[in-house]
Image (cartoon, rainbow, N blue to C red):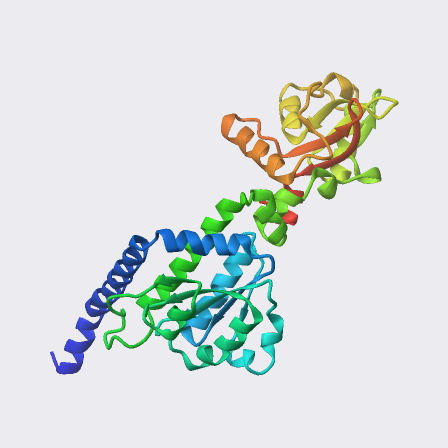
Length: 338
């Protein structure tokens, strides 16, 4: 085996070892940061809670990338926040900051030139300052109202140069602040949904049956004296996997599904002469127009787990059983709630 072959054969094992070592170093950094959570951390959370404006996260380089993520996490968990690049701040973006805001400045060294340049202006505006730094004796640390120690024993980089463990520690501290404040605010699932309307959870908690249901002529409904043949034609034409029988007032008297059809044919029923009302389920599951999509999904999944008769289609009723709509699992899939 030549030297090139030996290097190639050793490479996979070395890559695994290198990868595990990086994770070990970063886990050690996270544990060290966790051990420092205490009074200063509580003070930082209180500062964020008391902020009457927005939290402005400032960071340069890799700290800036982490700062953007922290600002995004704060905003999505109930704390209005945005990121400002310190270089751009010196050229006009400081105008985004008001005296009612709170600044979170991130710098591992605590001496980042771009940060130090804007520090006097930020302080002059009257903005509160929370600093995340790895150097508690630095300029930024001394000027802070609250300073949190994010120092690490070593970077995961073998040269101990590239920000790796330090950026992980910073991100974890930022997440800790955001989530702690979220809990202190009492930020609920409904609050989360309002900031995430495009996500699955947001849609489940913001959309109601009335937003999803078919209405009017698209409803598969037949009159009380209709034959089974008439009901099946209605069910086939409306493509919801079900049809309902209603009285003269539009109240639901019963429901017939694809599953009911299979069971009925197995009994040898004559579809041309049988009355639909004699074969429908007289006590179908229905939902009100104001039921959240989240609850509809939960009910359908619970039924699927509990027995052979899953709920795939439902009628939406109000005012004593009057049918106002219908929906099925395809409608839920279409809008992305399941």
